[in-house]
Length: 350
Image 1 (tube, rainbow, N blue to C red):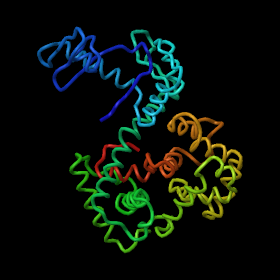
Image 2 (tube, helix red, strand yellow):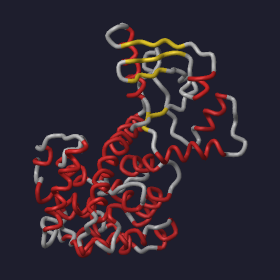
Image 3 (tube, rainbow, N blue to C red):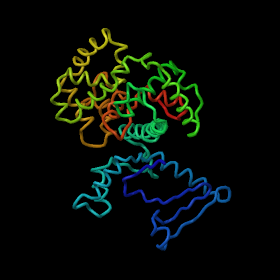
Image 4 (cartoon, helix red, strand yellow):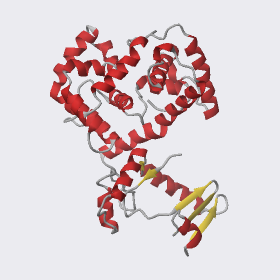
């Protein structure tokens, strides 16, 4: 199920579409609105009432313009409602809410009202990409993996996401190379689960899983544990040396992908990353990304695109994978992960 939201007090439409039936009127979707209050609503049927198709189009316009509602935003809403002294007048309460939740306003009849800022447009795309596509896809792989119950010995001491991330990376590198990752057909939930089960059988039959990967499987669990320990708090990040931070970031596969383009491997990338960014900027960005204020995806946007926060050689894939390793609520997703999920039949976009 997907939920989207507006913060604007100007959004007052009540429209419900269930299958081939729509209802539009004054009633809120509450027990009082539907069962006890005296409301006025009109029911329209597809194929019988010409207005039905217009309502569906109107809903799609509102839906496309709305922002994705996440668990993190739900927590922020709860915090706003529990804040002592929260205003009750609509206009003041909207301002209060938008201190906690990114503002989102619907389009209306005014010319240009459907134009959104560059940042909000990007965040909309980022939330839809991750919250509505990639995270549910990764979760289904998690569910199949948990039901299977097997673990490879080299990953047994780590949490399941470490092995799942390695499994998806192995699948992409060894069985869906180049552009073949999108050659398989999209599939429904049952078929996707069966494909995951079939590939897990192959995964567990392998003598080793290092083929095509620059990070040794035996090092994977230790790398992620080191990453989480080094950057676990703002204070720990600030106290770390550059070498400690670089070694921690080396556990991020998307960061390691840069080795393909740097002479001398890690020995070449280590001084280059420092020279391009400076230790102070590296620490400031990582602390902001992992421990700063505002919603996580807002910070994730700033790190690649805000010149005061961005780091050379640390783009969206690095940012989103790092967030996933550090946040138990969000899976580690990078370019290889996305391509592997598409190879398994999930409708996701790179």
